[in-house]
Length: 56
Image (cartoon, rainbow, N blue to C red):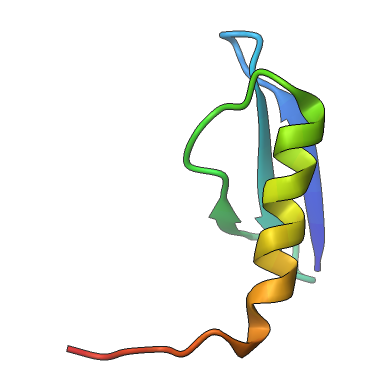
């Protein structure tokens, strides 16, 4: 599994998370003006393993 950090066509930073089979499984959902903000969002996702999962 790996994250890919890139600039989009609007010159904003985004990330995409890929599974070990190179398939996309998540993305940032929004662009970031600063690369550091985008990297922080990746860190938040990485640290959310203990977050509860709710079902409807």
